[in-house]
Amino acid sequence: MTANIFIGGGGVDYADPQDLSLGYANRHGLIAGATGTGKTVTLQILAEGFSNAGVPVFLSDVKGDLSGLAKPGTPDHKLHRPFTERATKIGFSDYTYHACPVTFWDLFGEQGHPVRTTVSEMGPLLLASLLELSEAQEGILNIAFRLADEEGMPLLDLKDLQALLVWIGENAKSLSLRYGNVSTASIGAIQRRLLVLENQGGAGLFGEPALELADLMRTDENGKGRINLLAADKLMNSPGLYATFLLWLLSELFEELPEVGDPDKPKLVFFFDEAHLLFDDAPKALVDKVEQVARLIRSKGVGIYFITQNPADVPEDILGQLGNRFQHALRAFTAKDRKQLRMAAETYRENPRFSTEEAIREVGVGEAVTSMLLKKGIPGVVERTLIRPPSSQLGPITKAERAAFMAASDMAGKYDETLDRKSAFEMLKARADKAATEAAVAEEKAEEADTPMLREFNAARRYSGKGVTRSTSRATRSSGGFGEAMTKMVVKELTGVTGRRMVRGILGGLFKGR
Image 1 (tube, helix red, strand yellow):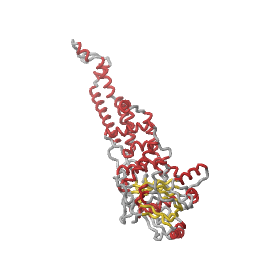
Image 2 (cartoon, rainbow, N blue to C red):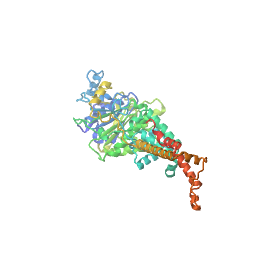
Image 3 (cartoon, helix red, strand yellow):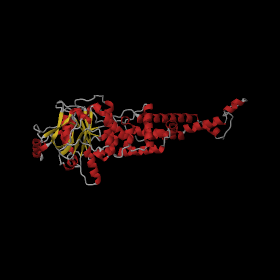
Image 4 (cartoon, rainbow, N blue to C red):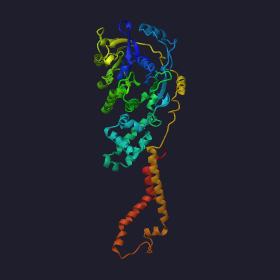
């Protein structure tokens, strides 16, 4: 265990060691660069370094090639010789091959242990962003969450929310008096968006057992931090779901972890690959949420590292809080590219030996312009750094190897089976069943009391005097007048076959086929 993570060699002939201080690793960071410039290897060696230092890591495997962290590199790899030569050049004298303790996760439960949360934990803000709702639709979603709290109906999975929205639609008139206009058209739009989410496989994200954050912050028997690898190659087909899940995870860490100030090393390091997906067309409220989390989660001992192609993909207010930077090559083919390159260079502390702007344009594959925080959090002078070679396998492992790691994991069996306890769907279904039963009982009583003589009397086909009580009292005659007769007629109609069907249609038909 060391106080620093060796990144690579800088200076003249790349002989000066470039280190990332663990004490400032929770001040966040940025890994940027064009496609094919070496961002993935930088991400891999940082994950190795944190793990070796006893710091748990969470990262998403967007391209599917980070699973090699679970296996050591081998001398028969085609890049063995270039790796050893680079290690010698940068003074990495204790370079050896070794694996890292890896736990595989997958929202779809295919390439890793399932990851779930509940609709209630996700909250209306993130869910509205995921569903791309309008302001009016988001307002109705907030009403649904409020009613669920007031009625004591847990929202665990999507069918809970869908059933509650139908109930709100059936009671829209009465709810509008309290919460404002509740449009059934808006409810229908939300239901359609939920259907799209289901078709994308997003229903698997919601349910129980929900992910326990403590399972992401573990070390192995040797004190190495576990690397939690989220399979994201399939998930990237639904970029909104990907970004919303990772932001939810950050928000949960922010809300649940205690304040620790400035620890000697982070409690968890979080890598957010393809970070631009979080900010593309995101509403201001969501961007503000990310900024708040990035600004305050540092004191919880969590470091966030954004990985993206261009620093311009990250809003300025968030970019200004990323203290440790690894800038791979940027291409400058257009005027816009040159402007962004110049802006990226201006964010670094200048080095008199070279032009930062030219260095960012010229660095080769496996080389980066780096700047890490020094004592008292002062940004270090920018340096051209040759990134050290990885100790784990470069490239993915096989499906059989992944399955073997999952079977041997201590998370095996904990999240595999879905639980379906009593929640909003079951509660609303019970109400519908009760209403249908009461309607059936009322109908049976009405049928028992409906004798042939009474039917003929009501149809005015026979008059025997037995169906009428006579009285000389004016008040008594008025009590059995037209109003009472109409009331009885309405009650009878509602308790009859038509009435029962109507009740079932409104309350019970929602659950048909469930």
